[in-house]
Each structure stands twice: as C-alpha cells, then as structure tokens.
Length: 108
Image 1 (spheres, helix red, strand yellow):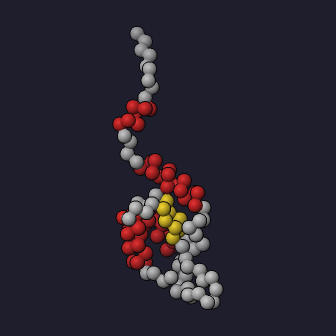
Image 2 (tube, one colour; image 1 turned 90 degrees about the vertical axis):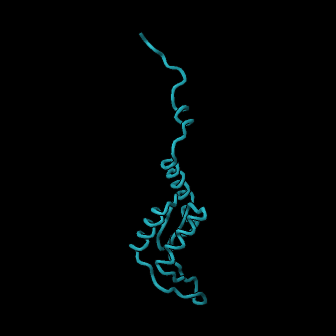
Image 3 (cartoon, rainbow, N blue to C red; image 1 turned 30 degrees about the vertical axis):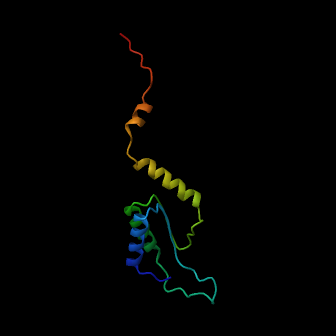
C-alpha cells in the first residue's frame, strides 16, 4: 500500500523472528476505483532484491513478484521450504547410525 523499502526490510526481519518461514512479496493492485489507489509501481529488479534479502534473512520459501498471491503456487512454495530445511538442518548422530548397514561381512 506504499511501504518504503526500509519498512519492507523491517517487516521481513520481524516476521522471520516471529517464526514465519514462508513469505510472498507482491504488488498491491487496486481492485476498483473505489479502493485505495496504487502509490507506486514496484520495479521488477526490486522484487528480485527483496527475494534475495528474504532468503538471506533465513526464510525457507520465498516468492516475489508483481502478480504473486499467497495462494499462488502454494504447494510449490511449501515444497521449496521442505527441501531447503532438509539441506540446512544439521544431521543428528542417530541419522548417521540409521544410514549405516546393519550387517557388514568381513572377508579374510
């Protein structure tokens, strides 16, 4: 609705600190003339920058663009988050034990 870039950055940090893992960043589109007018059109490179910032903050899933909506490819966004979590989660000792074969044959 007209947030500054600094306000968006602050909101991203606060949301992540509160436990939010998935985020969609988009452009307000005026549904009709009776609604609040668009303050400014966000340039495509700004959406790329905001996506990169959100990923650096630590969000597991980020979609950023002028036509992105919260339900827009929600399953894909969730899948991205699950994959990222699996890649970044530290392995537990019990995981390593499970990945080893139970019986090892020794030949002399």
